[in-house]
Image (tube, rainbow over all chains, first blue to last red):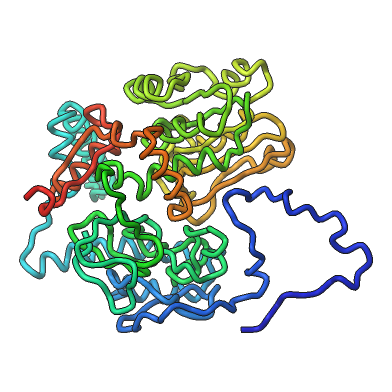
Length: 166
Length: 320
């Protein structure tokens, strides 16, 4: 890696008022100035890349270790690949990732169903605990949910419009 | 307990009882060497802002969650620490995340003797933050939350003032008034993205996700801290944009300090405090839930049911 540390000592007055104790990051950060040397440290052993790993375009490589729990796949994977063309400072990165997460939820449910497993939404949402400790709250949520869904259905349902002209 | 070790692991052996910090750190990169173990550059390929974290989604490396019967632990020689003999496992498990987070919140506040410190949110990390404040000095501690049982608990546990924000017409005016119209020296945002208390923030940040979480607590923090004061953030927000009164940060000359806890850096000190009886993390455990009922545990915690302060999950092997 390129050594990016620069020597400014030829500039008259450079660093004359530098005060190492004036570091607002202390004590969070033990300043070593190693980062001034760039990406030059001896890297740890690289974990074998046996699954597809998406990496931020703000770094040149895959990190030495990474998670393998959820490699990109299906439609959500396609959306994620698109997202990683953009940097972490771009909406082009995060908005597709938000969408991919939601698509992945649907993919997960479909995957469950295709394996003959019916997801237990009641258990996964922790509603057993809600029923035990806050039954009124759960009933209220269900009632509100039913009202909202009914209202939406009523709003979006095709209306019977009269074709007769007065 | 260590079940298996890789060929390069030197410090741990099968059968060791270890505590594993929530953040994954290589120990070799420039950031780890500076003690920024939460910002390791060799553990999260998917984002450069933060290092790898177990079970913290794609933005933190896509690792399996640590709340499991078994988990693969990268860089096992770096952060995982053998639990000292005689230490209660309940204390040890809370050293992996929430206690160091509370401690670092206080540390980042740069608390000085006599300072007035305000903290928004009375969750578990706050209990330890308040506990830790005493170690840093300070003179007056004020906790603001929306649940009476938590305020009652924190007031008794950590010897501080505790107020319910829904009983205040204006939280910032209340805090200014109670600090002789000066504002607090240090304000800690320990709530993060799930903050309640402002309808606009709740709708845009929590319901519609038009911003990366509700910034209600951060708003109050910025507006109730003294000019030239410090805002310490350990409440978690998403990586995209948030509505924050940055103009007031400038105009008041504030210092903002924030990070995920650097657990490995803090462990030796915190272990010492527990061994000396200064910290008692396990006192905050209110619920013990079988791992198989993790959804219920999360719901009890997030919905603040059954006066929950801190639940711990018990895997099947620990119940045998």
